[in-house]
Image (tube, one colour):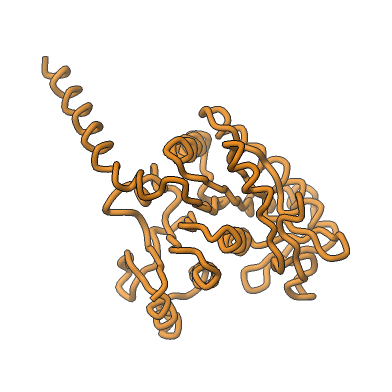
Length: 288
């Protein structure tokens, strides 16, 4: 009897949660949400399955999700296996002609297809592509010192809108093509921000391995403006690996994205908590 009562309470709680989510479900109907899924956030198979379920649910309630993924740890592992030396300058991988072939193989192959398969296994219809497909991302060289590392100069989101119309979920590897047909490796956050701007996305979710932007005491700041971000950066409160993410957020907002959220991708159902609950998750950054 006690077990049955406990189950009843769980079902009631579930029904209440769904009821409370209704305004948020209506709010995001037919919106575009771009999710940067980082290599560290991918975790194990259980974490991948949970993420895939969340993405399928988002689409089922009317959102058009786009996944842009990284894959740094997997690239490092493959480069080590092939005995190809690689180093980083200001957080960006120096990518020579040998390394870019490995980067493309890992990102467009192993990583991309793993995410596609996980989403399809949960009942979604995911399609894997890279920024080279249909000239989705045309790049210029970021810095000659970095080799084949590119910055998107032109984003052509027609292929993504075509997939939305077919009720498919795009999963994008952060690679681009140059004016002369060369392949460029793109920072995953940069690629996600560029795609979100081109689509004028309602939300850009940057999944990472920290809870969000923190203040000087180490507490997560849940609500930020552009001016707030600039001040915290100037004061040195925002530092290290958080700087590229907040820079991506500011560029995306300037490009027309309604808001950017930096959140812990390792937390269960992080995307759903952010979109469909009053509490949200992580740090949301909006225009002033």
